Amino acid sequence: MASSSRAGTSGVSRKIVWLAIAVVLAIALYTGGWFYAASWLKDRVTQELAASQQGLHSASCSNPDVRGFPFRIGVFCDAVGFDDRPTGLSATFGALRSAAQVYWPGHAVVEIDGPAQVRMTPDIVFDADWSLLHASVVAGTDGLDRASVAYDGLKGTLNAPSEGLTVAVSATHGEKHVRRSGEALDVAVSLHALTLGLKDKVLPPVDVALDMTIADAARWLSKEGVPGTVPRGTSTELRALSLDLGGGKTVTLSGPVSVDDEGYVSGALDLTVEGVDAWRDRISELFPETAKTARKMASAIKSLSGGQDRASVKLTLRQGTVYLAFFPIGEIPPL
Image 1 (cartoon, one colour):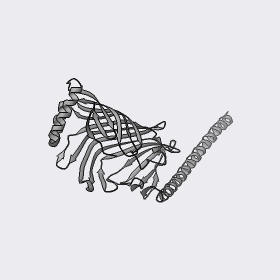
Image 2 (image 1 turned 90 degrees about the horizontal axis):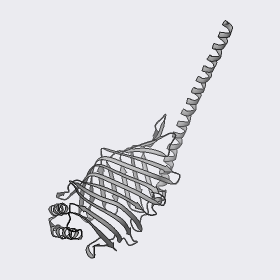
Image 3 (image 1 turned 45 degrees about the vertical axis):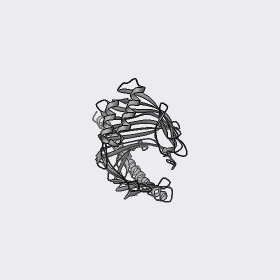
């Protein structure tokens, strides 16, 4: 009996030893694989960044590193930059931190520090900073499938010296989401408590929301990127563009909009205004020089809606000319 007991105990011990060896080997193999993948990723990023400097769309990452062991993997940079030569757009940002689960490397989360500077030819410059900016991207073999960006505490200044324009911008929270929808591109944007400062005027905080689909634009998320001619030659279904001042004062636009190859805008939009008189008074207060026009517009909108303070009217855009019913009320210059 004693011999049998010792044999049983010995068998169990061997199984435990073999299990321990297997666990150690698995950990060693996983660790080696992770660090091999990290080395490969760092080399690949370095090569791609170097190659991009010779192309039309270049990117930079200072002091690139790969971190996240054991269950994540991601690229870290002390600073990042982007230069799109066809559009004359370039940008610089602070540190970047990214992470993807090892089992799903195509889905990554990213945090970017400020400050940032975005430049567009000939002399448009946007300087910005924020308390938090994070993004989520899902990529396939031919580029992004979808991406989201959210930020808090945005503050910035837009300068365009050639236009004599300086605009201060702030928002407590903002989000942008893009995704492929077949051959189209879905875009949703929201800004909470957006405030604009124009010279000696500070506009009241407004919540902004945009929801639209751009036809034949899914390829913009591929490696070919956004064409330098955008927005010309685009066709968009504007599901909703809304401005909300609070207290029931809202403006909403919806309908199809297109921009031809010469930059002229055409479309058929539904305009809904909640609180026509309140909007008239606010615009007149902020821009006294437009008070007369604001009164005429408010009167026309209310008359087309039976005198109600909640009005729904049709706006028609033809080659940049805006019509309310049959009456031209403004011009949109070529984009």
